Length: 73
Image (cartoon, rainbow, N blue to C red; front, side):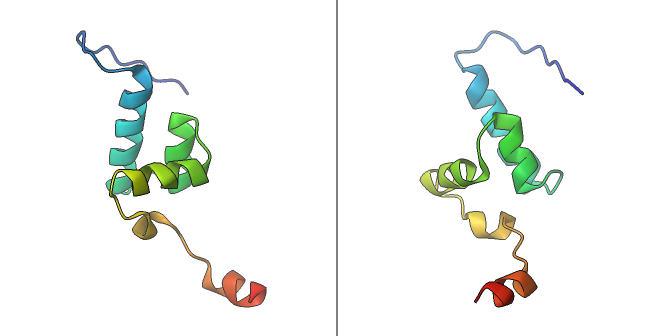
């Protein structure tokens, strides 16, 4: 599914608009971290690094599978 949005002329690059949209959708709980990263075209790791760079704590958006973590410990 594709989505097309027509915005007034702004001095903002398309990549920045996608990034802001992905961050907001994630914050609202409408998409997962992986889906938000996909919207922007980044890996999850790169997307988390952007959060850190912007001062947004990414930990509340990471789904930790504790059972898997215990198995790997």
